[in-house]
Image 1 (spheres, rainbow, N blue to C red):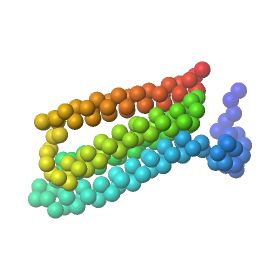
Image 2: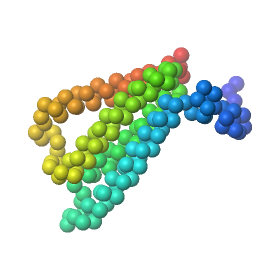
Image 3: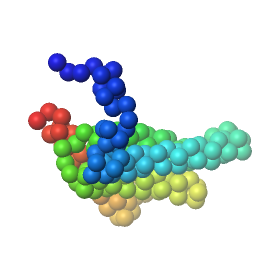
Length: 165
């Protein structure tokens, strides 16, 4: 019979008792860094929300530039996606370096996408970056697709192996 939540909590009254002694913390380094990334992306989303609000208040039609809106929303979504990744990393069977590498690749492309939206919002150069895509955008999108799906696939596989096999 599995222990109840209360029994688990009581057995872990002090975080140090449950800590992985190799790292001296209750969370492994791969999980800590991924959680930090989620928090930083969320903080960026909050700052972008202020920028969006200022544009809404200053605009005659009370709308922010489309890419300011997209940057804000993307940062919010990516912060929680990164949080999901951190949870899957926590329960992964893979070594920390594999999890951290896969998570870092995914987060790198999350942040890269947000930064490109910010750049379009600052320049106010388009309301759709795919209207006239150049070769660089096509290469970047291909890299993003491969990296995000591949990196997440590695993390999800580690979770599945760690929890079901």
